[in-house]
Image (cartoon, rainbow, N blue to C red; front, side):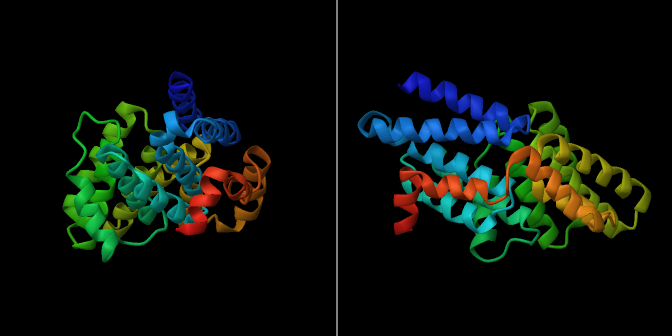
Length: 250
């Protein structure tokens, strides 16, 4: 059962990288079923299921749901690695909401940025969170340098979701600097990458920034046709005993 769990978990990550949201959710349902069916053996892996559920909710723009689920993942984590990944996902969630981290969120970014080494697959995401701190401090030069490294390392490691986020953050920095030509090119790249991996928050941001907000309804309809209604992931989450029971007490 452990081997089956690990194989299916790897498949979920692969499916998310390719933007196959519905297929990924079906695999997460299978993981939840495995943990529910064998709590004594697979119980310690429960936080991994919550992490994946939180990621899916974030991709679909269900930020409130994602935050609740990721907090459950952090609370149920039995090892430092799972806890660190939960904190990282919560930091990314703050970024995708479009705001600068403040208070507890800023403290979380401070903690996360020193946790992941360059060799870690999660390094580009941690570095991206660090970009937001530089921006919050008004250090545009540092933010620009770091986000360029995010784009480079995310591309090298094949993390297309972080690549899309990094491109969008780079475009915002360029806009503040007044570089309209390059910022437009970067926004177009972010839009293309977000469309490819079906990362809804980045796609919406790119369309709004490029003055294409008027086509959002049509884009969202198309996204729903490919992925499923944006509330569908939340309905799946609420139907899972592994999530429902935890969320009820969180």
